[in-house]
Amino acid sequence: MKIFPKDKKALIEAAMGKTPCDVVIQNVNMVNVFTGEIYKANIGIYEGFIAHIQCDPDDLHRQENELVGKQYYDGFGKYIIPGLIDAHIHIESTMMTPKNFAKAVVPHGTTTVVTDPHEIANVCGIDGVMYMHESSKNLPMRQYLLAPSCVPAVPGKENGGAIFQDKEVKQLLELKRVIGLAEVMDYPGVIHNDQRMVDILDCVEKRNLFMQGHAPFVSGRELSAYLCAGPNSDHESRIGQEARDKMRVGMYVDARESSISKNVEDIVKNIQDFRYFNYLTLCTDDREAEDILSSGHMNDVVRKAIKCGMNPIDAIRSATLNVAKEIGINNLGAIAPGYVADLVILDSLEEMNPCAVFFEGKLVAENKELKVEIVNQVFELENKNTMFVEDITLEDFKIKAPIQEGKIKTRVIKYQELNFSTTDFVIEEIPVKNGYLDISHDINLKFVIIINRHKGHQTKGYGVVRNFGTHMGAVGSTVSHDCHNLTIVYDTPQNAYIVAKDLIELGGGINCAKDEKMIEHLPLSVGGLMSTKPCDVIAKEATKMKKALKDLGLTEIENPLLRIATLALPVIPNAKMSDLGMVDVLKQQIVDLFV
Image (cartoon, rainbow, N blue to C red; front, side, top):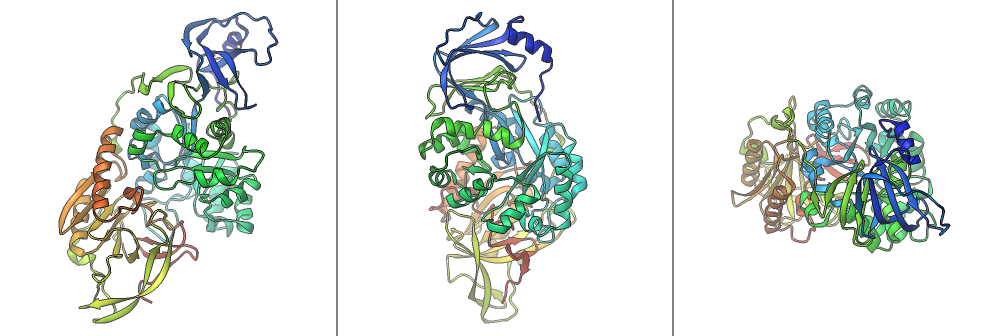
């Protein structure tokens, strides 16, 4: 796959010096991600592509006419690198629309992202993906989309707002900026030749397009089977050994530094003895507005990799050329003739703070400020209500037991650690009073309910969770991967009822209550996932929400906002929830609450 210039003949003329370049970037120290060198250069750009690079790294003193341009930009001896590429992201998880996301990340040097819109697809189906595609047009960055492969993540174990089969995937692959298949989360379905997954993978493979993987803790024969099926990347490697195993078999490891999962350090420190890093890429996956505002985007991930021991050029290559190779774009991610002129000028390779950002040869950001105007468009989906919850009562939040009094063996979801989303099932004896489960004796136990919020479903799943982190109150969210049903973790039915009614009225979001009073909420009216507000406003609202969550007890968790988001994700081991009940992830079975 290649990004083609409008007029290749004219580009060749500019390379030959017969036609002036549109822009000449002068006096820069160019980082060559092919060879690992840094040398002085002048770069000629014509109609968004690099026409010629004037340099003399070997001191040969070859005679050549100076580059002539209609405009000149002086780099003052600073470093110039390719525009940064995010190997895997869900823009919805930033809680920003594609337009506002671009405004936030372009000044940080991100010029391309590979986005999986399966969050909005699980809520709004094809219309959701179309919205992400259309609303990301004509931006000062490139937003490539992937066709969601798992809507819902695990069929039959949860109900979402849509179901994608190979028919829907084929339809989405026809869109201009859809370049392949999004993370294939149903790895059990893949390795056991589930017909739905076979058909979806087949329609992508026939088109010779990129297949993005998702294979947490998969190794040995299962990893071999997964690779034989077609997916060839993974952003779910959480420890160094996973990365080592996967890179050894030619799988791209998208080392992740999100707002909730921070895996770069362990991966980087454990692959330092490898000679080549061609199959290491970097990504953000889920990064919130507040983190982007305070720390940056892909520049922050590169910075982290460098601090963990990577050579700066290797880290930059992992966020540029390696990603382009991974997704199969042949002239992106490097500074070379015929390549797209996405460029970032930096004072320091270690600090990764952009002084200037060029997208397709145009200066789009300088000194952390956007230099181009983004037209404000309103899309129908942004005003669409996606909360279809039937009338609920206080009784809906009480868990009825099969006995009237005493204790009953109950299957409990237990978090392994406060800062990880992995969970296990444990069996506990929980008191029953007046026919209902009673957890008032233990502040580390909470009820959980998943209420389906999509049209055509009225299902509710009930469970009990240990070590969620809150000591009191109720936390609710419609950001609940991946079906994004209404998830509430609570101490009393009264608090849960207040949270549910508030989120239904808001059209979605995140909130919390205690002592039968609403404490704080973060409205996300676009699909229950995003806000039309800009990055700085969302960041302020998120900060207030985090403070409220910490007041409920989530003090040891680095990012309390997304603690609840992964409780209903039945592809992350080992015990999760859905609107159908408790899910044994490895067995892919709905299991009973009472043993």
